[in-house]
Length: 502
Image (cartoon, rainbow, N blue to C red; front, top):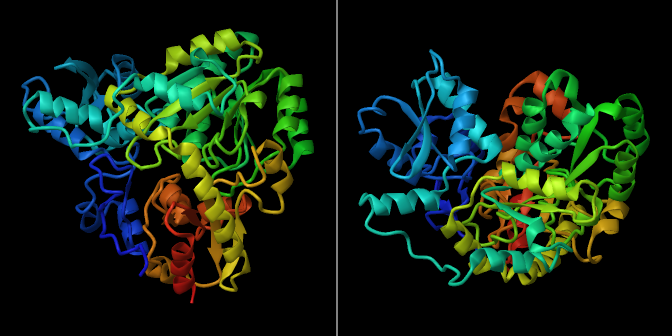
């Protein structure tokens, strides 16, 4: 009997009110979710926290909207007064936006004219910067206000949660507590790192940023939208293995390059550059480097010695039960400008809600064991997919093209991470609808998850001719599937895949 059973549309995965994933069991559901079709969205009470406003936050906005000064306005609840000020500035305080910062009942937010355009702009801004009030913070406020009787029961760390999280992170980072800076999400960590290096480098005449390879959706957006002059300062180098081409880019633009953002490995093609060689090139030209280990986790790859700043999601692998969103910036204490970057990164980070820290601390201690189990299963599943006649192509950390580069930063040869991407020789919908694995966004959970990643992350590109051409130019198929291996019996995972591939 398989451990896997169908999960209805919109059901939270793994089931906590604070789950970071929700079930999207068919390709039709994926399209309905992306297009905002009511027949799909009415089933979805929560989803990945930076993309779906949580039902607790919506309820809290409804409660606050009864106040005369907020009635009839769109409300956003955010992580701090600084984030509220930033959002209001982005939306515009003059008419027609008329965005205004408010602080009510200990909550920071922005109220603005209720229009679809402004609602979309506000949501995307908070998505990119990781500025949404967390679901636990919203729940705690609802309890305090008497709207909810009590918070959902869950296991919390009883002691100093921050100290526990940093204790575990010190087992994989050669850094002190002052170098380990916690954030409410991985994107907020990346934004803080980006701002820190940008502030440091701007007086030196360095404002340009380099994107190496195809990055995660919001990482690309950060560089495209928040460099001082994106038309001039957003530089892209698509091939992570093309060191000679990258060197030419530095020869042309090196004097004004502030930094590089590098995922090692990348998401979703799981490609790894020669990190040491790229960083040496950046150092010669005075650029600083942000490294992101999210796809494999810092328990598998050792990136800090090469980075100025590591920006990582703690939602993945460390919060492996799938019910916390958090992140961290880690400062390389031996890097140039370490003291200044430590201060600047801290200044740009948003606060983390205490109960999110307590929940993360309750599970982070098991990360090394969980990751080891995922690694072992991933090696078996990758071999299975590579040998299956129904599979077109497989990408994982030990794929031939970048295997050597990955092993240079891997902690052990078995430290492969839990992610595999692949394409099929047959129709995507037939396989996706049939496979009995849990289906939804996110990764690095004890629950196995599969998703048509490009549909979820880049639906605008999937649905246009120009977009598909752009994807193809970067080696991305619209039908790429991303599989996150959990801790269920590996034979059950492979049996589900084999059944759907038959």
